[in-house]
Length: 75
Ligand SMILES: [Zn+2]
Image (tube, rainbow, N blue to C red; front, side, top):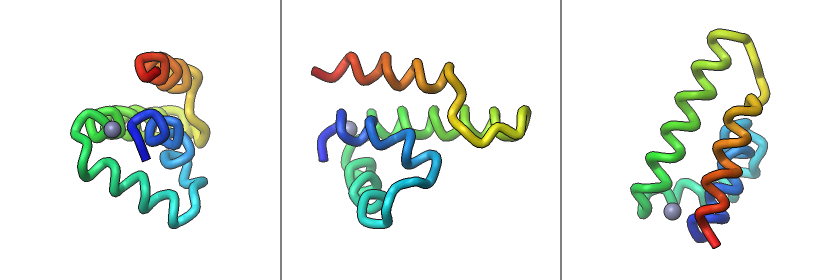
């Protein structure tokens, strides 16, 4: 799995909608790729914050937009 594929799965991963095998693949990539870890930590913390403040279960639009932006950096 490359960085782009990992980030594409980030959303789903945050929402716990991936299969166990997919989660394992994402985690394996994260172990070897510090930039993706930073991205993941940021998104996870944003989501936790949103959840605590608003009781929101789904990723907010701002988070969605940020991931789209990051995805554009990967050809
Ligand atoms: Zn990566």
